[in-house]
Image (cartoon, rainbow, N blue to C red; front, side, top):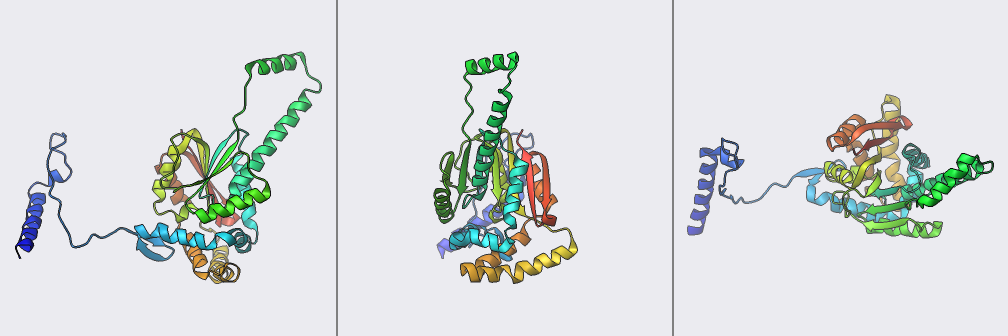
Length: 329
């Protein structure tokens, strides 16, 4: 009884403190100086945790990451097969277009966040290797009939002893099963040089500041609990002049295409998930998560609010997906 009385008295004292002097709640005095005051900490019977969406469900924020992890843990082995089935292979063209817009040069350092099974990183390594071979062919061709100036420049380049930085791709994903599948694919397809795999959270990346030239996240940011935090982390790990690129499902602008897309998404994709991957619920979530993701303009504004400049987006397949791009200055 006495303990209950003390608890009621403490709550009453705290409530009266907040009403009598509301300025103390912010810790700022009228003169603009920081006030050194002790705020009473109230005890409540229970705290209301913030909620977020998991597909069309509303769940506590603390649960979303675990649920998303289980989704991709479940589908990891059939992830690439399902991508082909769901998109009728068009996802390959979308990813190729991402690389075309990116146009990375030899010596670039890429962070492939939520990179999962490595699709973007593999394409990145192939693209930069092709660019390097092309540059070498052009150099050989130009040296077949060199001018005196070309000869002088070649000696100057040798004297400078310049070495091109190694092209590197780092696949970072929170899900160990996805990374395991990605590593197996890399070994089977002969990708090893310049490629590494890191377990990490997009909201708290395990890298120092100013480390990468390009940051990509493909079909992953809609699964993040706090998108704003993931964008801030992208800005932090990019070098000045670095580029943020996101490939993600977006909003279809054409009404007829939108109706067809919705019908296919909700009536066909979960069925494919059950037949191919034995998992209806995971693919039902993936479809629902696409509908909850912000439209192109809203996401563009979020990227700008995070601190990126020259933000723009490119609609692909009528807005079924979009590539968003921005730079760190």
